[in-house]
Length: 227
Image 1 (spheres, rainbow, N blue to C red):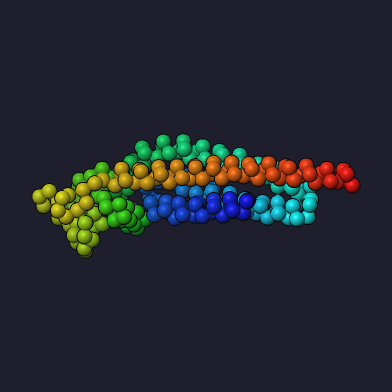
Image 2 (cartoon, rainbow, N blue to C red):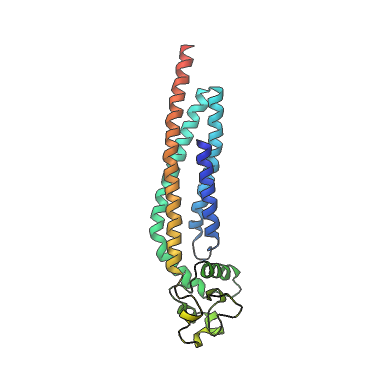
């Protein structure tokens, strides 16, 4: 059971971490640490589970009790991480909006990370700018090219975003109309909710393992006393 829980945490943590990493310039490193913690806890559970299996096979009362205690400690850590994720979910909106507006000003200015984050966000979510494509007007990139990045275009062709502000109603004909903030906000909140839910859910499954381990430890102790 512990091995299954550990693998589940590692997989979920790895998938969300990979997803977050694409938007590293939009979020604080503390948000990226959440899935990393989940991966670390998963590895720890996997190791502790192996320890518990050895204790059960060898019928070692000491090893089984140690396994139960370690699993209980990990449960407390997971519960705290799960609650922290839900609290973080309510803070992500303001921080994300501020970071997106701030990072737009650095687009194309020898900041490959910012360029990559925005191009991925705008292409994958079919959006443009933070709240609207007009946000690009107030950036160095927008002033220089009188337009938006090519990743805003409905058909991503080289130079398709240039001089877009000279066109009539470009949001309906050439580029995606919606801003990226609302779409990314929903994406981040969903991922954080998944992190918290998985951490808490698997934590309670681990509690069942703790109960079984305690029962086994008691049974082994009774055997020793009988002998």
